[in-house]
Length: 151
Image 1 (cartoon, rainbow, N blue to C red):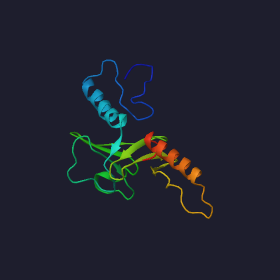
Image 2 (tube, rainbow, N blue to C red; image 1 turned 60 degrees about the vertical axis):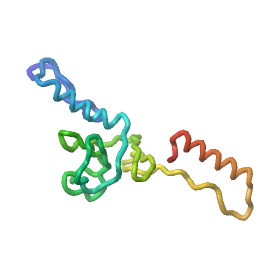
Image 3 (cartoon, rainbow, N blue to C red; image 1 turned 45 degrees about the vertical axis):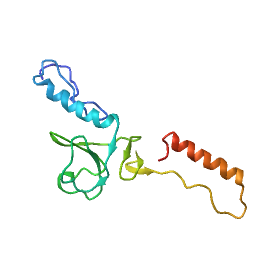
Image 4 (cartoon, rainbow, N blue to C red; image 1 turned 90 degrees about the vertical axis):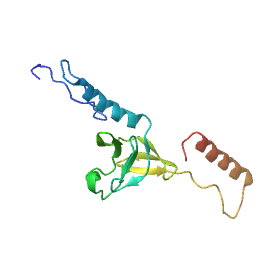
């Protein structure tokens, strides 16, 4: 580009491609951005895998596990999305959440890794049992599940 003003070619957070004035074939840039936005708007993964599945369907996503191989090599912790154009890998950001269908639970990306968000077990055990406190704790855990904070 001969313009003296320097423009970024992609967005800062998720590297979505940006358009330039006079750019030819803008539809390619827009379609790439739309594919990534489609994955990020409601992220749902099938499971955590170290190797790509044999027959993915359009729109399916996986979380790339450690020791990744094949097309997943070098993409650990990224969301791998399959589309007509092949694999797209999206780097997570702190605070990102996705729903893991295989675990029936949400995963949260924080401090450089994904962790499963699971509800604590209900109150049990102890030598002195306070049934009112146990009932209150069980109600709090149920409310947090209903709010989608715990799976």
